Length: 310
Image 1 (cartoon, rainbow, N blue to C red):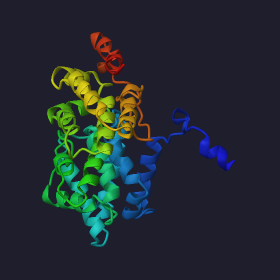
Image 2 (cartoon, rainbow, N blue to C red; image 1 turned 90 degrees about the horizontal axis):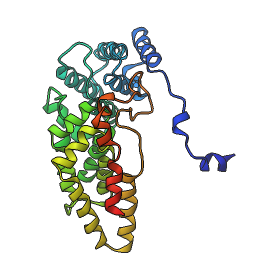
Image 3 (tube, helix red, strand yellow; image 1 turned 30 degrees about the vertical axis):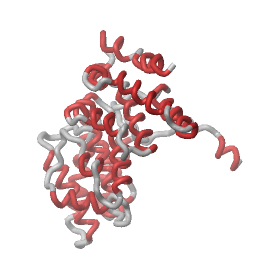
Image 4 (cartoon, rainbow, N blue to C red; image 1 turned 90 degrees about the vertical axis):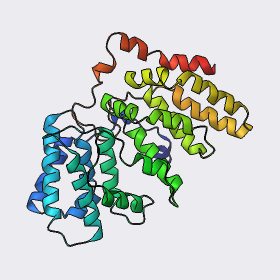
């Protein structure tokens, strides 16, 4: 049985997913009656779920998320002045100050950032703890039209600069789930930054792998695909990537081939959530990305990439 469980492929589609409405109602009730202490609440991941739920297209889920976060903040005020409490309070206030409308749907890249930060700020030994703490103390408001802490982490000069860069690359990958996220990436020149950095001497194998994964995820979005082709020279960039890697050693070439398959293989659409928790309504594709001529433009693009590397 042990060998069977180790070798059996993971059937992601058939994994049981929890109902976010149940989790949020449970969270709200537990905080109200005092069953769970605030720091335990955050450590269990319930705070992270509330943050992620703020990006749900379902208004009912967002209302529950906002109510849960409001109650969490109230209970947090009653805690002793511990360092981790102060950091979590800063995160809550920073996000709250960036919200402009009641029950506002925030971009998923921002909600996932807040969810990840809620874990990191509980662990002073985490590589990103010091940088995140400093940035939160120096800024009173999260800009919901930007990728949070992107420049500070991607161009980090700290001792953990490589870990910072890889962390923000993973956040950018996980945060691309809707046309709003795509617009944020375009507005902040995220694709251009990654495509340029790929050829930088500072770009290591793992960074290049993540950049290719971001490119793969990006071409599932019509808006980003068009931007990549028309404004970023994606086809020429891919050609340059191929040319550069043909000069490498056999081992490096094999690594590159594995990286490139990440771009070519089919994957989930970016309109679907990346978290294990499937938010109500958010599992439906964004029809604005797949209507009319946009659908015709989007679907065969992987074939265009494949023809280049054939």
